Image (cartoon, rainbow, N blue to C red; front, side):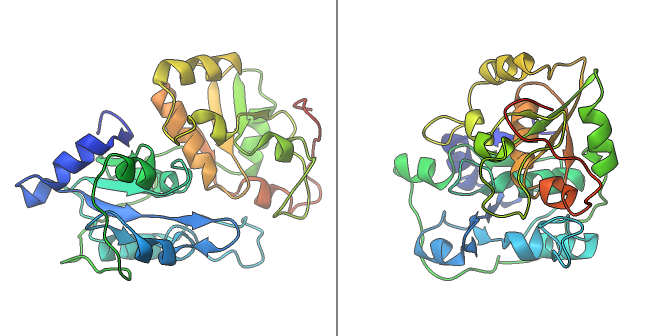
Length: 289
């Protein structure tokens, strides 16, 4: 297993320049935003040489359908594995994912690859901005195909998950901590730009993914993350879970928790699934409820 879920620009550049093709990482560009969705246009304008664009909606999530599973349900195995192989991912070759959003989208690819048993996958700390700031080259052009497809195969189960009932139980467990990774105003129910109901799961505590990174989109140091999570009760002695709006940025929370030395479960359905059942309670305001 890779020692850290992050890779910095210098380490990535060295790996890409390496003489051993088998150790040269498969590079996944996972740019996406809440308004426009997948951003192959940004990839075409500038991307790290050798990167392959991965469509979050098509490759890293199942169709939302009637949304009873949330806005970004986990993809079925066939879809995910096929997409990863098409992107050049192999079982014995490192994988690096990146975005332009502080790792909040790239972490979904990281989490899924880990979930399917890939042991050498990392998120580029600081993303494309850090790469460019270091004076590293970029390429332009439409999405490229890898020289040859990968052979990655696996089965889900290597990462912990929660369903709605388990998330509710964790939020109400004195020995558990359920973290809401959305921005504070969404947690409090003051605004909800995407989903039809606002608020949070009763008992959940708020830790926005924005608080896990600095102004340049780089993750805080592990000891700083550890102190922040400890203040919320997320310690080695607690059972910890995370959710967000649709299960994408919550993977970023899981990554931050791992940097702090903590294992956490992902509630993939998240808020967008929670609110589809009118019998599930909703809390508003700054308190867990």
